[in-house]
Image (cartoon, rainbow, N blue to C red; front, side, top):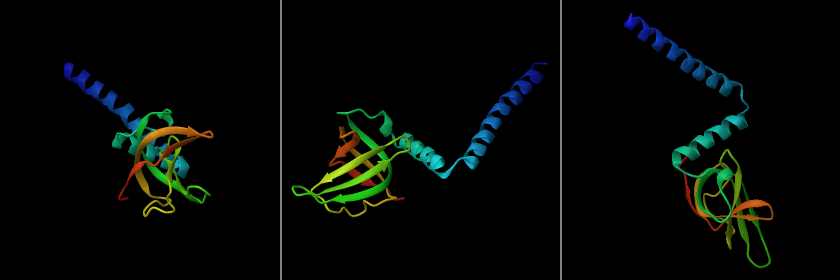
Length: 137
């Protein structure tokens, strides 16, 4: 009788896990590409041990990782700037390099990890002159 209860309990425990797996797969199949991409980027943030952009606070030194969405060179009278928007699935942060016109490898679609002091300027999230490392993929 004990063996029957154990088998019965094990069988019941497997069903919810199987349903959870199936519902996750169905959700992934029916979700739009942007949602799936954001979920994948968020899992990359967790596995890399980085902070999600949405959890970063002004003044903190943070390490963030994600994909570059856009790169803009802004010529200015005083100091030119190169700005890259980094998206990690939870939000975006603008990486700003002062005095740079171009940085090899900083281009839309590339994955990178950046470290620096998180700031807010004119209502947007910014990291100035971050240390960065380009990912292979």
